[in-house]
Amino acid sequence: MRLSATDRQLLALLREDARAPVAELARRLKLSRTTVQSRIERLQREGVIAGYTVRVHDEAERSWIRAWIMITVLPKQMPAVVEALRAMPEVRSLHSVSGPFDLIALGTVPTVGEMDELTDRIGALDGVERTTSSIVLSAKFER
Picture 1: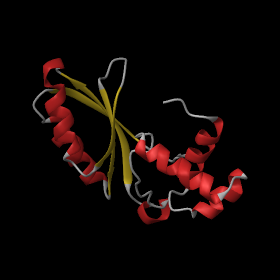
Picture 2: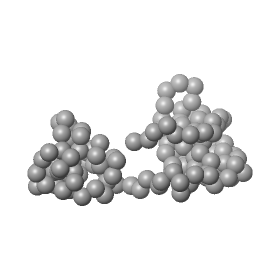
Picture 3: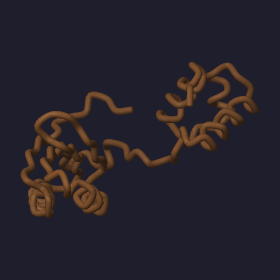
């Protein structure tokens, strides 16, 4: 589906706060409330908006350890590895990438010891050849 400039602006506002009242979104977009509500419903119906999620404030997990975990996978094992990673709640996101690694996962846990355990569990999955991790020191911004 082609997104108009207004659709893209609306999606950007919803990324900031998916719970923002339609009246506030309409005011910021300089559109009527009915128009904004219709656009949201159309974007949901057409699958552009696939769902809503919770973003936890940095303060709530300030002391938690986050790491990007780069993973090399045996080609025929990719579906099973993806499903195993999906089942791990500590894995917040998973991306297929080009380059020397096949996947990059964002792991988030309370302690360094638990990050060590998480990377060991990922490395022990059938089909995972190797992992390399980089601890996140700070996030400059997220959208």
